[in-house]
Image (cartoon, rainbow, N blue to C red; front, side, top):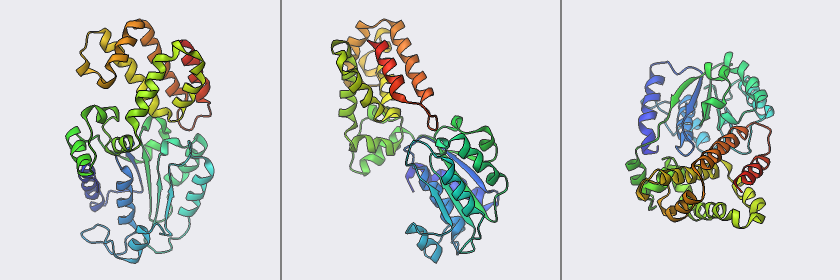
Amino acid sequence: MYPWLRKEWLNLLEVARAGRLGHAWLLLGDEGLGKEQLADALAQRHLCQQHVDDQACGHCHACQLFSKGNHPDLGRIGVEGKSIGIDPVREICRRLGESAQLGRGKVVIIEGAERMTEAAANALLKTLEEPAGDSLILLLASQSSRLLPTILSRCNKHLCPIPPESVTLRWLEEQGISATQSQVRLCRGAPLRVRQYLEEGGDAQRRELLSSLCRLPEDPSRLAALASSINGDLERHLQWLQLLLADALKVQAGCPAAQLNMPDLADPVGELARQCSTERLLDAQQGLLAIREHCQPGLLTNPMIHLHQWLCRWL
């Protein structure tokens, strides 16, 4: 168990020991916190044939099947794709209605539950209201606002908080990864997101993307390529753009480089602050918020159209 999740696991285990676990849980928290570990621990405990101190034993037939990813009474919808349609949800609901093959109940885990389309969420509602047998439904989400109120009202909820920066930096160091406080904040403090960011060369990608935006007025022909680059990882790239604009506004307000979100880009940020009025920067920020709203998971929209419009206004 990741160190920042140990307390969360003990809290959930205490609820389970008291017999108050219920049949549906929503595990909330930023991507990159490892909520999947909590869901797996709850699922394995529910399916284990021989508890040890009320936790999964790790040795019985059910636990062995679970560790190999072959447990017949466990259903999972992963994070592949931009949305979760009705068909996979109907399938896991059908499986929940069948008898447990190993006699210890059934478990369903839905990762990125906020990606469910409205039809998929409605298909899940009846099962949440009347789960079959000894069922446990675990939904993982990073933004509860994107879930239907009817889904929220039928689930117990547990929020996984962002760990202190010192915990994240210490854990990364133990993994052999050198990170700065600024890089942790760029990734909104989620340890696994920081690790992925650094291992994939995120710093270089960020500098190139934001430099391309700053140079766009000098070479408007690059607009289509820049829009495509932003769309490649829309959620993360929109955040970078928002931080760039926020830093330019900080410079205009007289903040020193040490207080910037991205101090390694102090020079281009300073140039941006000199070239753009405060009104233009604020308008650009509002435009990014609108793009984020229009392009939520599960919505049938083309982000490229909104990105092109935003970049044209930027010019």
